[in-house]
Each structure stands twice: as C-alpha cells, then as structure tokens.
Length: 291
Image 1: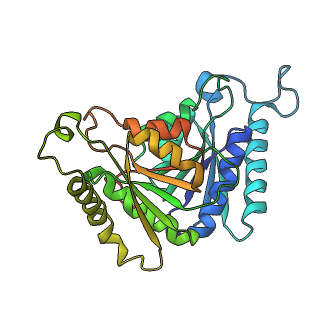
Image 2: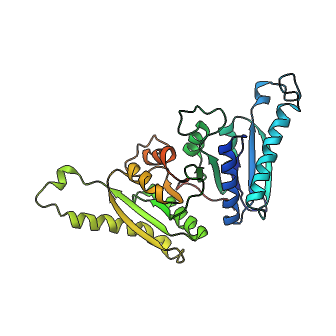
Image 3: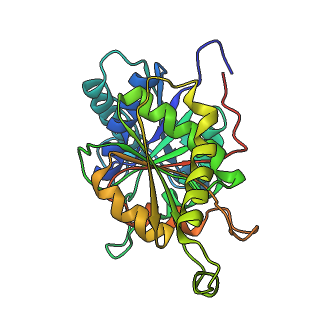
C-alpha cells in the first residue's frame, strides 16, 4: 500500500442503490478513520464504442456521463461524511472484475444490493453476488431498512470459517457503540433427540459453551462492547433473517460448518444477502487487512 491507509471502497453506477451504498461507505470510512475510494467501471472502451459526444449521447458522450456519475457519488459521500478524504476513479472494465481488483488494496468493499440494469424480479444484483462470492476483502452489502437501528447481529456456528466474522462483528459493534448479539443456531438430530439417554439441557449447555468459546478471543480486545448471547433452535438462514429485523447490521462468515468445499459463498450468507432486513457484512478468514 501507499503511505495513506487502505481505503473503504465503493462502486458507483448511477443507480439509487449504489448511491445508498456510497453514503454507507462514507459513514464506514468515518468510523474507521480511513479514506473513501469511489470507482466506476467503464466498460465501453473494451467494446470499441466511441466514448465522446455522439448522436445517441450528444451532451459530452459516455465518458462525460461516467464522470458525472462519479461526481454525484462523491458529492453524496461528502455530504454524508464531510471530514472523510474522498477520491474517485474511472476504471476500464466490467464492474465485478474492476471491483475485485480494486478490493485487493481496500479495507472494506461496500456495494448496493441492486445496480443499473437489474431485473425487477431479482433479489440481489449480479455484481453484488460476484464480488461477495470472490472478494478476499470483507464485503458490506447495503440492503433492507434505510436507517437500521439495534444491535450488531453475529451469526456464529463455531466453524473455522467464522473466526473472521467474530472479529469483524466485535469491531463493527465497537465502532458503532452498539450491543453485539451473538447467535448460535442449532438443530437437534431427530434420531438422537428421541433416544432415552438424550439430555436436552446438557446438549443446549454444550452448544452455548461452544458459542462462548468462539467469542472469548475477542472479548479482551473489545472490552467496551456489551455482548448478549442467544441460542436458537432452527435453521440458521431462516432464523438469522428473522433476527435481522431487529438489527442494524448482520455479520457472518463466507462459509460455515457443513459447507461444500467447492462453494465460495455458503447457503446461510446467500440467504442473508437476498433476504436480510438490514445490511449484511461478509467476512473471510483468509483476508489479511492491508495497512
């Protein structure tokens, strides 16, 4: 990295969803005391399209239109967080590859859940899906309620893949001055639960201990964060979506326990990206934060 700290990265495409994400990225940059970098993926040069004034786009051309999108995004960010250092970049390429490349030097990527050209029936835009699936940098997808309040909700299953999510959730709660609600969703096996020797209370206690163990490493580093734990019986994706209705942010790992090794994004994180009532932060354990 350069001498300045790694930025919060946001993509701008001129859509209302992207502008909401830019504003959220500005708030994140202010909380994290990092600069904000806004990029626009300019695909037309790759398609050998004239980007200057033309009969179809007489007022300045496609490049001028892209520069206008960036200027509007920067203005929205500055209004949201006046003290944040803001830079803009017009980068040649398709949106997902451009964002994934820029994400390598970012502290966080912030995206809207839908962009320009999205079909009305889709719950999540293709760019958000691709970047969330492939980025090694944490990705915040802005969706749900416009001004969410409540605790930071952490979905924790105790798997190796949830370590980064735990750390990210503590950090997010600390920055926001919010309570951290750490939830472990578990399911009793019907065959085991019906046996005479099955001790439901002991099983519940063991599940709760696993949750506490997953949190312990971060409690000391974030003593200011008030933590509430909850053990919920059910399906993880369904229960976390339900609980997101009372949260300001949901934090989960990219893949959890039982995920197929070929999948880049687990079923629980996918459900949240499509259905959560508030923004969703996806964290990966193989991410090494840039300086």
